[in-house]
Amino acid sequence: MSVRLSTFAWRNLWRNARRTLVLISVFTLGIFTMLLIQSFLQGWMKSTLETTYKNLAEPIQIHHPAYLDEPEVEHFFDFNAQLKQQLENTPDIQIAPRIRVNATMQSEYDSVSVMIVGFNPQAEKGLSFLSESMLTGDYQREAAGLVIGEKLAKRLTTQLDRRVVLMAQKNGGGLAEIGLPIQGLYKHADPRIEESLVFMPIDTAANWLNIKQGLHEIGMVPATDNKLEIQTLSAELQAAFPELSVQTIWQRQPILEATLELSENMIWIWLGFVLLLMMLGMLNTLMMSLYERQQEFNLLYSLGIKPLRLRLLVVYEVGLILLVSTLLAILLMLGLVAWIGDGIELQRFAEGAAQFGMGTKLYLLIDLPKWTEVLVATLSTTIVFSLWPIWRATRHNRLQAR
Amino acid sequence: MPPILEIQQLCKHYHDGDKLIQAVDQVSLTIEKGEFISLYGPSGSGKTTLLNLIGGLERPDSGDILLNGQSTPKLNTDQLTDLRLNKIGFIFQSYNLIPVFSALENVAFIMQMQGQDKASTLERAREVLKAVGLEGLENRRPAHLSGGQQQRVAIARAIAAKPSLVLADEPTANLDSQNSRALIELLKQLNEELNMTFIITSHDPEVIHFAPRQIQLRDGQVVSNDLDKDKN
Image (cartoon, rainbow over all chains, first blue to last red; front, side, top):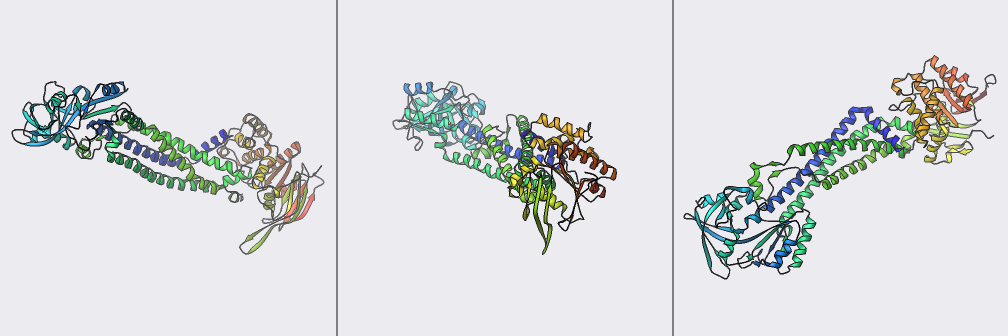
């Protein structure tokens, strides 16, 4: 019987093709807009997280427990065999060991405060922004040398292959000085990073600062981007090494998490607004349609069709419109996603966006669970909203008069 | 054998502003199975109201209607709807076919709503359409049929499920005299062949006098209830 009603409903839709097409257009546009907002926001959030990770703020980081509050040279930890083995045995992660201290950098013209990052070029490859941001020179050279930002170079009025002097507190007390050549320049969207982060080989940094085998930080990027899995992995490592501090990015940067959560909540306000407009359009058209069809309902009722079946008939009609609209909206979205491809780099706004820690790539992320949430919300809201006019038009007392 | 329809002291009134209109007033009738009855009277005499009461489309203020011995005013709304679906066939003045269905589908629809399987309902619908002279037009939609043909489809729809009673409200009102005559002859033929009970309201003297039994209403009351001996 239900097959029969669905056929009846489908044919009814095309009795007034213009009205049906208007409704399908409204719903397609509405659902498309909602999927677009959702996909755009998910893409932006992912891009923001990826940008943050690449700015040496990986999903999981290991530090000396005091380091994050006081990033002093002596707050290092021993990269011992047990820790190495544990990390080697953890599947699907990339790790980057680092030494990080504040220092003063001096050229023959000026001196500025910088953050020294002692790094392993091989481990860092693909993890930090450095591999994608080199302007000139080579960050992978094994010889002792520095990679600095272009803006910092300008500020110090220095250039590639020129030597600069670094001065920092060394482990055990006293000042440590080292003179090194600049062997690479990088460019970064965030001027604060470009003017402050200075990279040098990790062995050079360890010798210079007298922290043999010591590290200030291990950055870890798991293959998964699932928050719960990352939190679980972090908790496992913390349990295995209670003398260290193992924290996720959400623990280290609660503001970032709050921003992303706020964005995720904002989307529902937007979606609610779009949904409301759709509902107004739908209710108006549906009520007109039901009013025009009152005679038909009366006839069917007279013939012995119960109000419940009449309601089911109109619900089928609304459902079919939704089905067609949803398919069209998904097709449009897939087309748009394919057209945009890997995303659009917003170079013009990159500096401003980077300063707020935001991603600079505009792309649409097909997040099936999120799409499902949007579609379920839209479809169920529409059906629920349509029930009221349908119920009104098919009440017994309304149907009495033939 | 008990009568198929027994109407006892039936009353129904309406309010038109402050005015009380007694649409059906103390009507009592007994109708036997297989009768062919015309119900006539001037506009406002209560014909359609009486038909609606018999068909369970309206509820009486007082009195009783026994269809096959079952008191219909005592049924709830859903039971009345089931009664209309299973026991009563309706033929309307303006055909009231479902425009998106073909003639065949229109006829099969009620049987399918009763829960009968699709194949057997389509077979039965073809049979009935043939019986009303519409063989070859099964797949046409109402918009592609003439008024007379549409009313024949409506008749086929009304009788296809073999109801106990067929109620026809001015079935020839929208037809020319030739079609009107052909249609009423068809109804009579079906009445005789199927032994189905027909109650037909009409203003048309030809239709009225074609029926063996004629019931005249005026101001909601039965003023004559004649059996035409020559035709019965």
